Amino acid sequence: MKKNSKTFKDIVSENNNSNNDTISNEKLKGWVYFNKNELNKKYKKDDENESKKPKKKKEESTKEILEFYKKLSNRWNNYRDEINELVGDTSPFINYKNDIEKIVEEENMILEEIYNETTNYSSSSEDDLF
Image 1 (cartoon, rainbow, N blue to C red):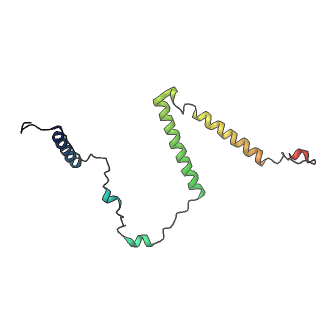
Image 2 (cartoon, rainbow, N blue to C red; image 1 turned 120 degrees about the horizontal axis):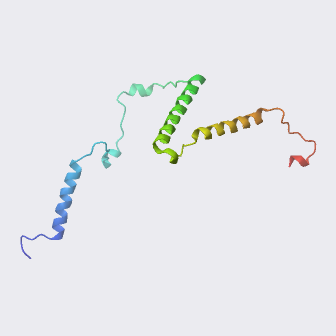
Image 3 (tube, rainbow, N blue to C red; image 1 turned 135 degrees about the vertical axis):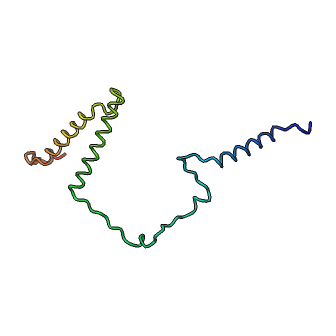
């Protein structure tokens, strides 16, 4: 062989070395890079006094919870309306208002049956129990 000629192994190793250098130097914005050595580290809070204090939980009242659920349902309804406008008839939420009305009617009917005292299921014979 000639002294100036390169083998396939030499060319591939040069390409791999140059690719590794460019990959390690170029870090894309928005990506998170992990290093094996950094995964085993444990991070402590800056102020340890705060961690010693017991955290007080804020107890929400019933009105606050209902307001939260109303906001949540309004956001979901706005999302469904946007999807309906964007996708049209192929939207999975095309009839969501009718579906919600059916669910509410079913729940009301079930609650009415549960709390209705006119449906008294008593029997004097043991055969009706099985």
